[in-house]
Amino acid sequence: MSFTIERDWTTKAGFRAVVMMGGMGHRCGYVGVPSGHPLHGVEYGADCAALVFPENESIGKRGIIPLLCANGEARPDVVFNVHGGLTYSVGNGAYPVESDLWWFGFDCSHAGDAPSPEYCAKLRESYPDQSFMWRDRDGTHRSLAYCVEECELLAQQFVDRVLLKVQP
Image (cartoon, rainbow, N blue to C red):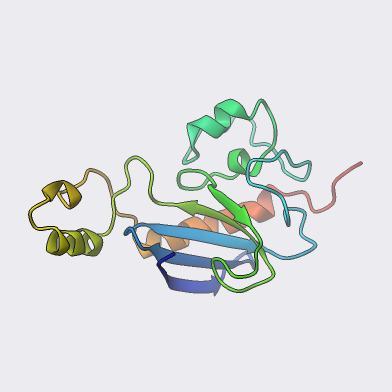
């Protein structure tokens, strides 16, 4: 797997975050929760009693399919409003960076997103006679600043939408 860590920091809300550029020219953002946090170990598509479901909130930046399939469940991919919705959750120690955190992530490789101009230029150079590989693509390439802001927003939602003590 080819990627470059572009930023690794602690968010204003106190969670570690990482933005990386993937090998296909799209960025991904991740925010980690420590052991003992109510979301540690929760899959992004699993119902979680510690989440506050955002009633009467617009779809926002989430994916529509998780919202339609959630059936009223308070799942991370439905509760957290982030670019394209959450598409990743795991705590394997090495990805996206070495840690003991449980990571939630989003990617900027959805409809309406475009790869970086640098990635397209490399394709153009490598495949000059195959324009389908590198021609201009519709969509917006998401900047590092955009992904940092999305991570900051996700981290703040971890504060605003997670019950620290779940009622039995």
